[in-house]
Amino acid sequence: MKKILIFCAFIAGMINSEAQTVIDNFTVGPYVVDYNGQGDVKYRLRDNINLYEFFELKRDTTIISLAKEIPVKHAIQISGRVGANRYASKEIGLEGVWKQNVGKNLYFNGGLSFAIGHSSSGDFGRKRNMFEVGVPLQIELGKLNRQYASLYGLFGLTPTFYSTINASKIEGNKRVDDVKKSGFLIAPSLEFGGNIPVGSIIMRIGVYGTYKINCTPSDYDVYKKCAGHMFLGAKIGIVL
Image 1 (cartoon, rainbow, N blue to C red):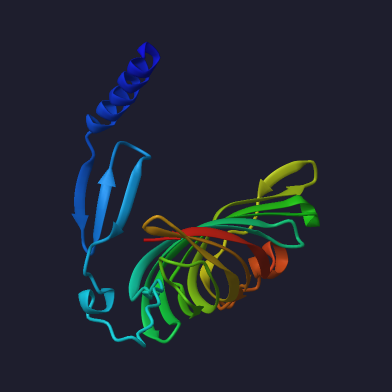
Image 2 (image 1 turned 180 degrees about the horizontal axis):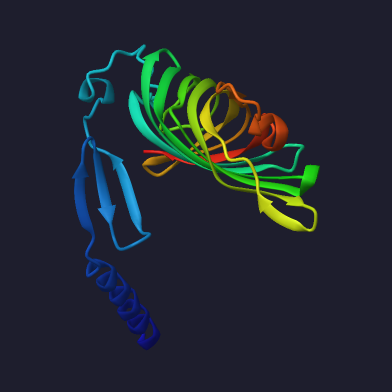
């Protein structure tokens, strides 16, 4: 008899313990949610709820959720570039352009660019540092949006003013000043690369090739004689 009384008391304690557990109850849309602490959640459809009627759906309705591509209409792009050619000439540049969407996946870019060039020629030990400021005009093809990575390609023409910062050569056993020239050139260019969304900005990485055509008549073409016309390199930038 004593063992039966103890067993009954144990069962009553368990029932009483469960009865004291407080379960929070919420109604969320067509569902009832029982919440009993983090990780302990149960939910069920409310009684007498028809989901078709609740959401005003027809029985042949299919719901597909797709992330919408939102193309960039206009933006500012800032890029840096590093290039070189077979004459061991090098260039470092900075470019800022305004991008305007003019058609499906088509953009017109216009802005301002600056570059410093260094060339070293075995001909009389010539060394030359150049400064260039240009107006890049570009047509770009590619999907530019802030949701997905994409590829792009562009063709551009850059009217450019150039000037010699300093130039020298070896005469005899001495290094003396060389011819300094300033003038204008046109630089057609091709560029290919990719766009990578990072938060609210777009990272841009690409490769480029440009050919500098000196438009200033002179008896000494610094690009033909020393710096070289063709440059290949890499560009990296951001689209804001």
